[in-house]
Length: 471
Image 1 (tube, rainbow, N blue to C red):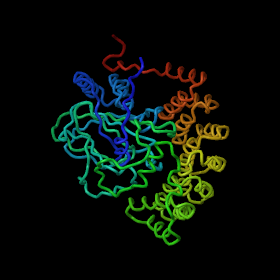
Image 2 (image 1 turned 45 degrees about the vertical axis):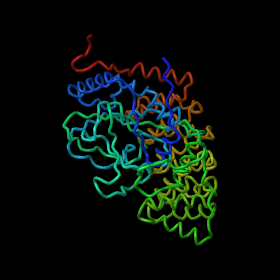
Image 3 (image 1 turned 180 degrees about the horizontal axis):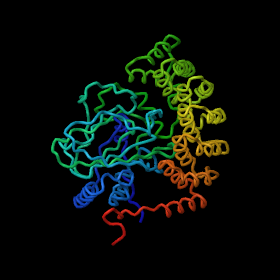
Image 4 (image 1 turned 90 degrees about the vertical axis):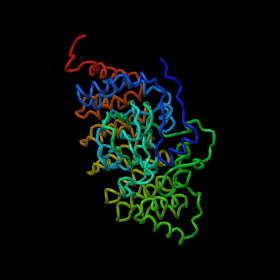
């Protein structure tokens, strides 16, 4: 049966997502659906515990949630039509009268440089009525692009909560600061968290776009510093316009560039990020200033400069490639990250990036693995390199190689034998991403390997310690 047509987000909803980093949306399942779903969750949690990554097959009703047109439309709008469901998922159970700690979710550790562009997103689904007193997820609007927690209070002004009727869900930028809020009612509260990833860069708007140019949403509650250049650049990126900031701002002369560059060292991260995006629009002078920032002794300054270089267009490619030879691992990671965001504009750097797959630093090899797939071409160089990554001693390099080959798609056909071997990897996520890569490659040999794996590892959702064989 075909899925219903996705209900795509509107321009106003996309503007809100870009500025605030989240949307609170609602499905329209009948009350009986959610009563049955929560009864099933109660039974599984009471008798078996949290099913962890087997949440979806164990609670089969959940698949209807992720086929719902409001859910598929929201994900398509933000991540494109070929988004991927991550193998990690978790059913959060909150019975605590004390709020959880503010945090960003891990990418399997916190070493990976986080994207400003929405490459990853999460759905947090609430299967029961969730008033504020029941402890919904708290979200700090506009904090998706801040590495640091810039608000000091545990209960900051402006916190948003994913409160609503059964079927409410939060679509959030993966990197936003969030927490669980206090459950003051003492009743069961579930939040079902699923992660999703983009498998291809945007070439055109994937939402219900009616206005091509950026403008602010009519209203937004982001209490932080405004980021007009960043927001407009993200809108343009999602519309398929790569490097839209390049040469859009007059440099104002050497003194003005130096004054803006000095703000890269501002300890208040939002101000530093604004400076990076401003420099990205100032042409060669701005790129030169950002490169000085990339080579700065302070890692935070280097990282901030990398975000500016990542949106500065083709002029940033050559100096970034030279920076790959830096003796400092963090600088190499930041330069490789920026080259990945520049995608096909950075194709000339592919040979230099491939050489780094022999680098002793695991974060360097992890970053380069992802960067190669984001650049994407020439495939005859990138695919053999990613095949090597599937055999790396570091499990995260192997994990990223599977995701990278999923992004390469059919051009990655030469990797099918190695992906088939990766289906036997000791790590569950390497196996999962290898299976996804075979799916996205989609050739007959890839499908044959995938089907064999799925048949041999099929999981029975009704087999439990209490029901091993019958009925």
